[in-house]
Image (cartoon, rainbow, N blue to C red):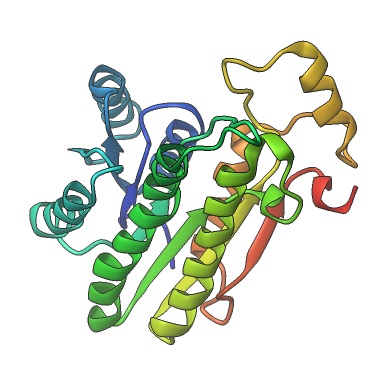
Length: 245
C-alpha cells in the first residue's frame, strides 16, 4: 500500500510517539486523522501545522478510549465523516506502575480498557469494513516487555500481551484482504515520573545501550504500511535488543 493519498487514523496522535507517526505519514502524503482525548489544543496545532507544511488533509476526532461507547462512536464517525479508512494505527496507550500486594481492579480495568479493549473494538469495527472493501492495514503499538513483565508493571504488561493476541487474532480473521501487525517498542520516551537511576538501568538492559527515538517507530509504521501484502501477523521489535538481553 502506497501511503500517499491514503486516509490513516492514528489514535493518541496529538502528542509523543503518536504525533511523530502522524507527522511522518503526513510528510509522505497521507490524509491523517488525528484522534485525541484531552489534548484538543495540541491536536489542533498539529493539524494546522501538517496542513500548512505538507498540504495534506487532516481530520480531528475526540474520544475517551476508556469508554467503550466512545470508541464505537469513534469508529463510526471516522468512517462516515472522512470516508473509507485505508489504515488504522492503534497507538494510544496508558502507562503507570502498580504495587504488588496492593493491586486494584480499577488499575487493571483502566489499563485494559485503553490498551486492549479500545484497539480490539477499533480492529473489529474498522477492520471488518476494510475487509468488505477488499483492502486495509492495521498496526497495533504494543510493547516488548509483555515477554518479561516487571513487578511494577504487571497489569500494564498483561494489557499489552492481550493486544498482541488481538493483533494475531485479527490477522487471521481479516485475511487475506487486511494485514495486521504489531510493533513492540523498547525505551523511546520516558514517562514523566521516571528518574535518572531507573533510566540508566533500562538503557543498560538493551543491546544498543541507548534510547530509541520516536522516528524509529514512525519509520517502522511506514515500512509495515508499504510492505508486501504477503507480510501479516508480524511482531516487529523496535527495542534496541531489549527483548534479547
